[in-house]
Length: 451
Image (cartoon, one colour):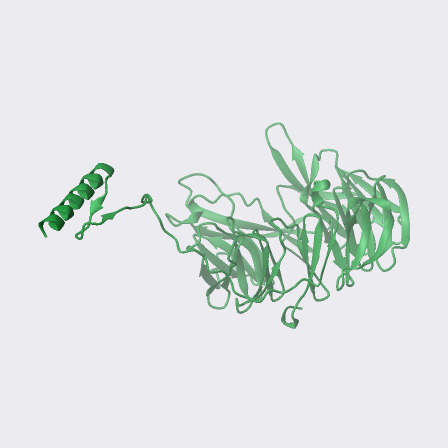
């Protein structure tokens, strides 16, 4: 008995000595406890993900990667159940339902073209303009005009307008014959706004580089002759054209003076043909201390039908645009989202909701115009491309998963594996969602609720 007690004492003493030497402890029954290194901090529980059915793509096909041309605009277009895109620098037409190639245009084309009412318009690699029948690739005409590195192309009515550097060229869409050419000598380039149809007048925006700064100018061009009718400095396109009058927001740059306690939006009412000022509207408000307006130098605004929305002091004010009254008060105000510091207004109203985006994760959320109720459409990873078509919200995520969500209810509907981290555009054509990833197109049949 004494021998067993002595042995136990020796073992406990040895364990205690060892634990002291290596920084361990001894429990009440004499067994040492070995602890792993403790983290400095640990938090977060992860994301269970959105559990919706995976939908298999109907088809997929390889196409040219847009990075080859350093250009994404107008590199893929859709219409009449077809997809018009490039493969091996050749213009091709695919069936939106099956992905099968319908035709391949034999000539090399420049990677900018448009689809308009049954025809495809663009330039060949040598710079000449062309028109094709979208149904059978038949060349309708090829002009003798050479336009290298086309900046912009658009069709309004019976006229095609091609923009290159500081030139605007008007082409008859039926014959390819040049109608006129307008030159803006002072322009350094056309802005991203391009051109706008204003009845008998064409609006175009140009950028002018001066010694100290760069300004934007809006020009009004006579559609018949190509002559400049009038111009205005620091104006974007009008927010509305009606009864021969254009409504322009004038110089929406707010004062940066700390003591300036007023903000305003001024609208100039201009005769479309003459440029004569026919009236003006001023919407003004006082700055509330601590609000976003203290540091905003550009006020978000947008027109939806007869509703004119202006962001003011962390709120959104809705005015009756048709029945303007000087010093008039807004019909309704809504609180801007405050829970998301990365939010920004998309300046768009859809299906009765004011839309916002998120700079950081590409998600979408909104404010309901009826009652100010907030709603969001979110995935389970950052969205590289977020697109809305009708009742469908599509989030193409950086983890290679695309989520489809019902716009009205916010309910996730299905998922698609794309395997991509980058997307150019998502097209919707004849009941199919066309997903454009680098060097690949994926066709997904949409449920009846989203067609």
